[in-house]
Length: 252
Ligand code: BEZ
Image (cartoon, rainbow, N blue to C red; front, side, top):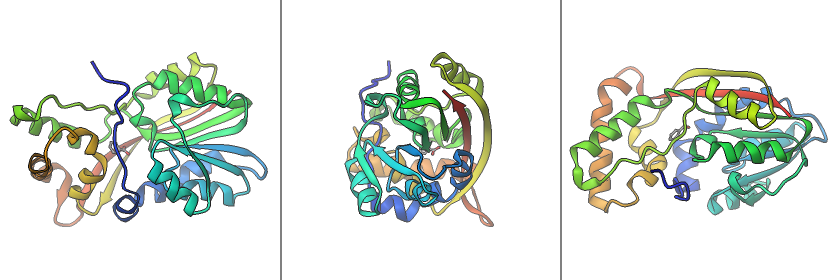
């Protein structure tokens, strides 16, 4: 059984900026779908270092960013965003926001029903929820490579692939169950060039390897990288992460 209370990852803001800056750069179409208006109150769930929240604020909205990582919230504040340490599973807000926005965060949440219930409750009637995160098939090769390496090393224990990558149908049902009308929802395959899968693994899989010692973690990353060469690396393009995004807009 999955442990819903486990912190799924920890974040190093500097490494994230250096090797995962593409996460916010590629999300401008999601901000466009949000279409923030001057004077609106918008909640940015999983604000990270605040780059997208600031983009939304630049379009005239009053933005509050929330994130589970203290380090990321400090970075967001230093970057000029109003931000608080908070989990989507503990949101205290009731009918306060014109919109709730989230990029590349909801696949980390093991309790999607609770997250959506809290999001719906935070919205004013007529308010909108616009999000993008990993959908069905996301990072399939990467996850399978991790599974293979864990299977090869019984001493690593059980592979906990805690990410939540729903189909549009599955997620639409959850949204509707919590009183949100889905106006658009789709899967977008988006193979994404990255600098080296070693950096990606170091940033995004420390929750997977937290019980391993240093040597085992290094072995895990080295072997996953080797496993992925045939599917995710070419001389011409370098490393490509097999992202599939689920992009959604729903209205309370
Ligand atoms: C994603 O953004 O799709 C993602 C990032 C890290 C791990 C899993 C998924």
